[in-house]
Amino acid sequence: MRPLKEKVAVIDIGSNSIRLVINELDDKKGTRELHNLKQVARLSNYIDENYFLTAEGMKVLKESLQQFEEVLQHHHVTNVKAVATAAIRNAANKRQILDLIHRETSLHVRVLSEEEEAYYGYLAVINSTSHKDGISIDIGGGSTEITVFKNKKLQYAHSFPFGALTLKKKFFPQTEPSKQDLKQLSEYVLRQLDSLTWLKEAENLPVIGIGGSARNMSLVHQAQTNYPLSGLHQYEMKKADISSMMQLFENADLKERENIEGLSKDRADVIIPAVRVIYELADYISSNDFMMSSKGLREGLFFEEMLREHSADYFPEVTEESFFQLSREFEMNESYVQEVGSIARQLYTQLQPCVPNHLKEADNMTLLKKSARVLYIGEFISHETSSQHTFYVLTNRSIDGIPHSERLAMSFIASFKSKSWMKRLSQPFQSYVSKKEFKRYELLGSILKLAYALDRTKRKVVESVTVEDSGESLDLYIWCKNETYSYFEEVKSNKYKKHVEKVLKRNITLHFHPITELNKTFTF
Image (cartoon, rainbow, N blue to C red):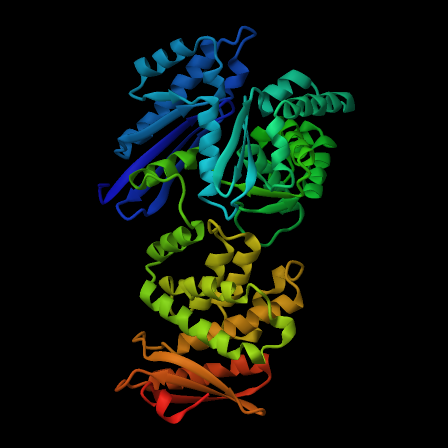
């Protein structure tokens, strides 16, 4: 049994950087990141021609770990998972490096095998995105891991003995790359990809990028396109977008790259080989879809810890797990949320024959269900301004399992207040959402708002709803629990019905009756 609250830390000793992440886990699977610290150690630069980590590299490693150790001690973290990847794994003096760490710190470092490193990347992706099939690529400083998974099951995994740092050292160590350098780099990468016969089975699968280089490429693309939605996790690009990023980086010198918005200076010298590897992989398997996963090796280790008690590799439903975490974080009443969602689904089902055909989409019910799960989540911050806060929260944080386009739709629907309100919010998103889509969000938002009114007192007054179409207007019958006052629900829903009327262009009359009258008085 897990303690009520436990701090769990991961130290990731990579070829380019060393990072410490401290999470707080609780006995109900809740998780919260407390600290995320990084040292740009560049250990690969301290590997000599005989593959030994030099004395200077040893010193950098020791001092970095001692600094992290001090942080761990201060925050009383005892559950520490320290892992090392390619730089130490491939070092000729690996044993001496581990002895140094053991001697100079209290840390026990586990050197991950190539297969383990690839596995943890896969574990992070399937537990934090909506993809059930895909190919992940994690470009580190000294190695590149790829996995192929189908129906969430790991099919193949491989670790290439090259990364962003080592490719730069191999093909253009001192200067900016020439066209010939880039050609030779691509030819080398293609030969490596050709060595994996099973890659053909990944044809057309989406490519999911992990790691700092993929993250920086995606950040630059967001900056270049003035992307209005916050959050990088699950950000999507097309192969043509990767190609344009590749050209942007390759046509700029180091100083110019250092000033590109979204590209961190410590990645400016290694971003070129990393992006070219991503592009060559996408091109090789004829994939047009790329998704950025901010969750990688470290998160994979955390997921392993969270799932250990359940003897499982992944959550059955990533989205459900995310909603669970959100409900805990924002102290949402799950019973109330489910009640409003149930009423909203009944309303949509009953009103569907009256919905204009151009607004009928296959995912309307799915969007309504998901939006109901985060309905007025901003009430946690302020009841008076819950709509504003709901919209802000949903447009400014990633939700695992929810793609950006769907998250934006949920933001409008769950925060819906009125058409004019939605119009004001929509200004930054005009180029990403069509007028038809905005109208659809208005429809679903107005239905959800009416459902919210029908449980105004949070007493589950409503048992069911039915609709009669009299031609000129709609009669909406609300069947309530026996011997239960529905006054407050009646007042609020009569006020909010106007939003549904505007979209459907029909007058709606509300009739509140006890549930016992349903079969006695009305026949449908």
